[in-house]
Length: 366
Ligand SMILES: NC(=O)c1ccc[n+]([C@@H]2O[C@H](COP(=O)([O-])OP(=O)(O)OC[C@H]3O[C@@H](n4cnc5c(N)ncnc54)[C@H](O)[C@@H]3O)[C@@H](O)[C@H]2O)c1
Figure (spheres, helix red, strand yellow):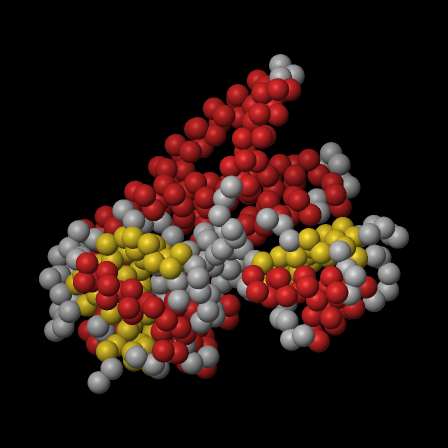
């Protein structure tokens, strides 16, 4: 008989894990969600074999439990694990983007049948819910595991095996390592992106034309500010200690930058920008990370009727599927830029080759 994987919370992350695990066929996948409609869609999409009525009855049937709810609910479910009588061993993981409180709660689990290993699949989408779930969401993404003190190497190996259909790249970190690193490369940039949008919104009162200028670059660096505010509220609050300390450092740094400008210190200003450029240019090639990324190409087009359609036709002819398309700047009669996003680097490179063969100027940002 197949072992049972139960997934509590069948939204973007839980739904995507359910789809990948079920597609392998090794486990019976049992799901539950607070929303009936989500449960219905999970069955319809083939993400789960069965829906269970409540958390406790599902957990009693499960061999592995994946908690994929918003963090406050995850903490609540973890607390319930002490109250449930289990006849067999239960390996539990979660998917929370911040690990501090979750791992504190994990250390409070006294039920001898339960072993907990924290998890954070580092890929996502600006969308939420089962509608946006995909079996390949975590392909090549980093998947961080944070084992609790009672988990041993065999438990870690087992959870990797269960999650292997997601085709992610597993890394094991301590809770502190995870929360500091994700604060630097994901949570803090999100906070700054949102603050930049607020600044632009305030300035728009002075310059009503501003939104027309807020094209390419501004949209690029603020793209993450369009993500799910409820999810990000939870992340900010859960990781607030690390974030506050980073904010303090950043304010000190901004004071220093302010002084450079006030003193018209060209050499030091250039050096500040140069050091940032060197570090940024030396980062490893694009891959899935904490901030959802796509494989983009930039195509110069002319503001002529049908220009957009021709580009799309060339790609469609070769069965290349486009993830997103955006016109960055088109002013009348002037060359504009089209940003086309793909799911993989292969499609990105192939699209460049196709469009260049039709004499388009194509750039890939490094
Ligand atoms: N979205 C991302 O980019 C991302 C990436 C990695 C990790 N995460 C983590 O994944 C978790 C879920 O986020 P998501 O993006 O899938 O959100 P989501 O809104 O798409 O899904 C959450 C699901 O949980 C369900 N739910 C809420 N309360 C519940 C309860 N008490 N019992 C059962 N189900 C309940 C909701 O109905 C919904 O279907 C969060 O903890 C988040 O930190 C999110």
